Length: 405
Image 1 (cartoon, rainbow, N blue to C red):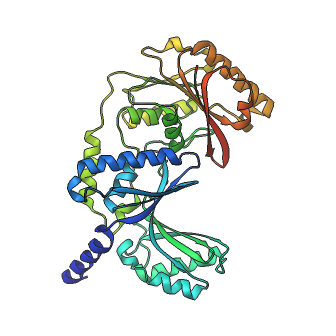
Image 2: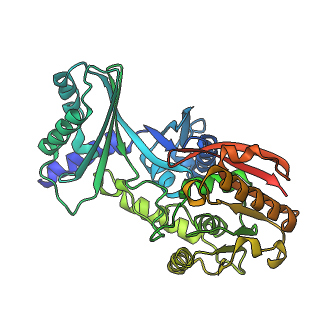
Image 3: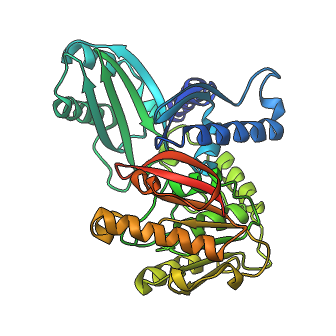
């Protein structure tokens, strides 16, 4: 590409992609939508405080348009999406809406698809992954459409360069109307980039962050995680207390886009790093009986510099007492075993009852967050000011109990 052509191309990217707001969709696990809305509003307020000169007084950096089961639609600039990927704790991924059109046949879809200036969105040689879902459409063969799109992108962007990041294109058809989206995040946002390996039944980081938020966990609060596994709750709480952004340790798909503003991104990430605070004492206590999971947990907090705030020990839950922990009473959070890990439903419920009795006996005055199947909560619970929240995890419908002990 000549210098003149490159300059013209850069101007097109700036005008069409960088210089105007776009529609985005935050994919969220059902049950966490309002928490993610609160995060988006707080992030928007923070962005507006830092850069009031970049927009009119009545404009918002992140303008929420609608909230539905499993997602939030909003308008924002590309730079705002950098911040959203970096900071949001409860979103699974953030999609950029590229186009929307009606198509009743492959030929009509192809015509509309080639009208999209893909070279402005995706770099030449990128590795596309196409996900298609069709409902009540005359184009009903999702795999066939995905194959065609992959071939068309190769025609537009050239042969695949295996050194490039994967770029995920989502196509959703409903009643012959198709929405084309790009995944700005890359890997799902619950992959924080600091954990190696997982335990028997790992909880996703996005759900852990949501549970902590439901329970009112705030920076500096004492946390006890007595069935920690590989430490998802503890790591999320540690990152919150040390003001480490959720995406600080990972990379994102947008960094390979033609529109990527490297200097702005580096400044944003550097500023976020300057906000990280050291801990002057350990306030997060994590324990588990499984030595393998605990060893993985220890390695993860060592490499992510969280050992100054987290104390991991190997211990049975039924041997722990609230008296073991120094400082003020705080939050105890549990993801107890259930399902196949405990045999039949009676064994699971009985174990849950025993856990609750132990909490009532030895953690009086503490706040509690516990996640378990809904039928577990049909038993009589010995807690005060109880609230139940519906959430989904790994296809299972679960409930989160928030209570005072």
